[in-house]
Amino acid sequence: MKAIRVHEFGPPDVMRLEEVPDLDAGAGQIVVRVRAAGVNPVDAYVRAGSYARKPSLPYTPGTDAAGEVESVGENVTLKVGTRVYVSGSLSGAYAEKALCREADAHELPSTLTFPQGAAINVPYATAYRALFQRAHAAAGEFVLVHGASGGVGVAALQIARAAGLRVCGTAGSLKGMELVLHEGAHYALDHGAADHFERVLALTGGRGVDIVLEMLANMNLGKDLKILAPGGRVVVIGSRGPAEIDPRDTMIRDAAILGMLLFNTPERDLKSIHCALFSGLENGVLRPVIGRELPLVQAPKAHEDILKSSAYGKIVLIP
Ligand code: NAP
Image (cartoon, rainbow, N blue to C red; front, side):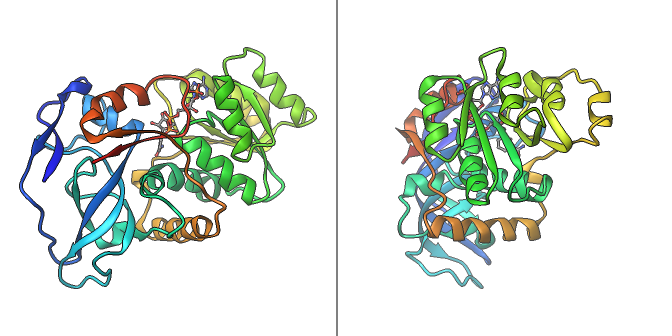
């Protein structure tokens, strides 16, 4: 089988398509024939060697994929041929096949394509956890999805809108803002505009937002705190550096800054997340948006693009 391999941490071109030995499923494991693999920013941080968690070299990148179960080990209930999306792989997802724990494989509703399946795990699980398990969002609250044109943002818009929140999403391009409105936001703003914080405040009649899902905290956290309603919460999902805040902004609002890392999620919470996602995927409320499909060999280009601005849905790799 073919797989992308990384022999040293570094720039995108350290990823090369190579021939590797076939995979065997052990007890509690399955081998998935990968039809599409999801590309997430974290894959690029890990490959660059700048992420806190480093795999031992050589390795195959990727945690998200969709395909069919090709073979199963002992004590597995999933049947060969079942369409699944996976939330983690023992061997890496950027490959023709991926070895996974059965617990990390989830049935893919027949209405979704494999590229859409590959776009589920990190974006949707992150958005769901941020909204409900960290911010404890309630219907009727106002949420600002700060960076809503990418993978996590689109997922957050669809989930929040379906749950009865008032939703404002931001993007850095006109095309991105159109996507934001199309995917469920009541309002779209340009996060490149210096006055967009005041505009958000105006949308709430000056009261402030209940929740901010923040994709770039190093740029925005200090100002996010100033547009929060009393009892407001900011969930820090993404940050590419330090931020300066005035702690008094949290005191006067009884506000909270909540960090999160999907990889820290306890197994019990993950189970609940994927049950909720299945229901939304099955009834059509959750519809992963694919921005671009690239052949597996173009993994280096996918990593260059995922860190560029003007996001539009998800980038997936097709083996
Ligand atoms: P993505 O698809 O590349 O999207 C990035 C998003 O950030 C786009 O919507 C982009 O908008 C937006 N952005 C750019 N400049 C911004 C600004 N000044 N203010 C607000 N948003 C801005 O990435 P993703 O998969 O959605 O992930 C988003 C971030 O969350 C990344 O940093 C990622 O590493 C992180 N993340 C963290 C977790 C976790 O567990 N904590 C899980 C998943 C992702 P434009 O391109 O339209 O400007």
